[in-house]
Length: 277
Image (cartoon, helix red, strand yellow):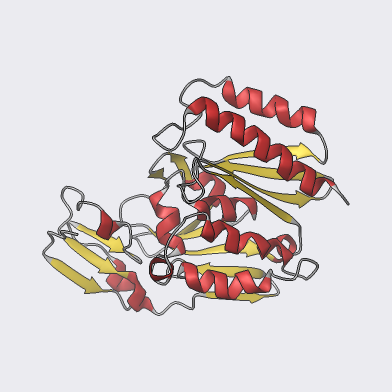
């Protein structure tokens, strides 16, 4: 790690979140510390000093702070979702989505939900998790206001997110109605402990199913199909393939063709799991 920067300051109030020239926000920093500092970055603003409650749940639903660590997400909402027939059963995929990042316990204690979302990487499994839960991200704007965006719309292409300079993800919200719905998770990689190459998260909603494709695509794709409608799912997948070579993601962890084939398999498995009453 070689952090060639001039300043690090800890934000404790909303006013402290106003960036100065050359500054960027710091959440857990696990990714930042593993990469060269981006050109032009001279200072960091540490958001962990804001003292945000990691997560809370009430009659309106679940709220997860941007600074909630992955460990806190698993030990909190993940535990709530452990009862497959309980009121929070949608959260049963939390632990699987965190595990999909193939990170150490040390990293999980530091890496944050907001940081994973803001990176916008195809393998950012917090995107697949919260998109499957139809979550909305609350974003603080530099003028002191806020706005909301669906997590499924937050990432536009690999590493590119709908965040303007100076904006920060304050929290992610999941409505109470979603928390009681059934969810499914599927993942594959080239090796048993390798980086996720294709991931499908899904949720049963009424007589339909929402499936979210991540890791195998540059940005999340949400497919809405009727329960048990495998033909309809195939039509949607063929439509994605028809968008062109840039639709399926390719890197050393998997070719476009292999990822497309694995995504189809995982999507049909998830649809089967969520198809029952």
